[in-house]
Amino acid sequence: MTGFKAEVFQNEYLPAGVDTIDAVVTVKAEDAEVGVSAQRDAVEIIAIDTSGSMQEEGGAKMHAAKAATQAAIDTISDGVYFAIIGGNAGAYMVYPRDGLAVSSPSTRDEAKRMVSRVRANGGTAIGTWLKAAAFLANQYPHAIAHCLLLTDGKNEHDEPGALAAAIRDCTGLLQCDTRGLGADWDINELRTISSALLGTVDIIPRPEDMEAEFRRLTEQAMGKQVGSVALRLWTPKGSVSQFVKQVAPNLEDLTGSAKPVNPLTNDYPLGSWSGDEERDYHIRVSIPTGNVGDERLAARVMLVIDDAEQPAALVRAIWTDDERLSTRINREVAHYTGQAELASVIAEGLAARDAGDQATATVKLGRAVQIAHQAGNGDTVRLLQKVVDVDDPATGTVRLKRQVNKTDEMALDVRSTRTVRVGKTK
Image (cartoon, rainbow, N blue to C red; front, side, top):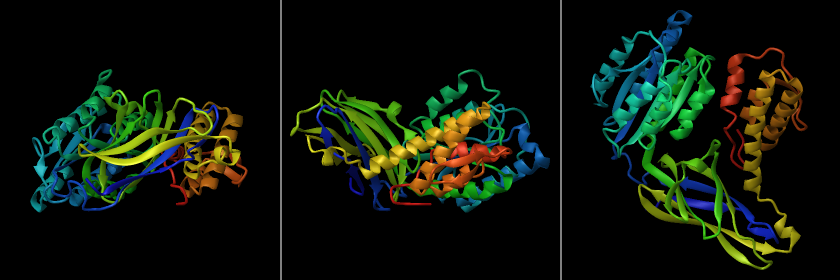
């Protein structure tokens, strides 16, 4: 299958005695017509929190959630299978009554009418919502399935282990983008879901922000054209893959998702793709050390697109005594190593701030400002400026703000894993 390509960026030269090689692999879908395109079955599931807390703020949250869901429904393409799930201490079908409907002007209008009748009550058991989504997606297991899940609270009413079991049920069946409304939800809960299900997590600070976000996510889902992509990594005997991490457009450690193909080869699922996506992956491989002048194939990168293997790129190692070659730092590897450090120091800084350790928080968040500034990551700099006063971004000189809005702090936390690509600013 054509339409995807991979390119490796690395410094292949190693000094004598070094046994680790790093590479950044850029994977790009080049042709909007590639793969199993719009003719492939697609499933769109929207799971909205209808617990009692959604009735707070005079009902503004529930009213906005219904309007956002209706906007998302309008965005679902004709012929797509879809359903709306209501979630509280259990899960129930808002539309259709059973199974999945086929999107058309009439079914979309009917779905919007049913959404308008939803009322908020009860608790929050997110695991039951995901189980319902898995049941629906499993009716068309070969479709490109996507779930948009919204909550304003914590998973307080699930049985122990129910959420983890539900995530396992969904794995491989659907991708899930999770969104938390306001400041009373648990970032780690939603991040765990989205990470396992190859989706994204973010905060929606205000009810009025919901409609645009729902529409954007649904439009994005409608653009998916290739249902299943995996990065296949072969390492020769004696070599070991230390990690595989997505580093753009956001940080995601894929190492634990490895699926063995044979003793030397693992697949790392990358989920579904649109026809114009580009993502970057950082690979680190341990290899038997060589002598000066030796050259070795450290890894072979392939792509598996809808079960068809496609050769992609090679990672090489060459041992040299030329320090000008061996000490050269590859631009892409250096950039994404810094982006990973950025996410780490933000997490450490916020944890220290919450613990009352202002000195550590100041150092860590100052370092975050410095890294983000150097990388041209303007979005993260602006998020940091809501938590610290920045005196000098180049040196990371900052002062902690005395008063910080909780949603601003959560936004910095949840968006800390977003990255900018090499040479691109935002």
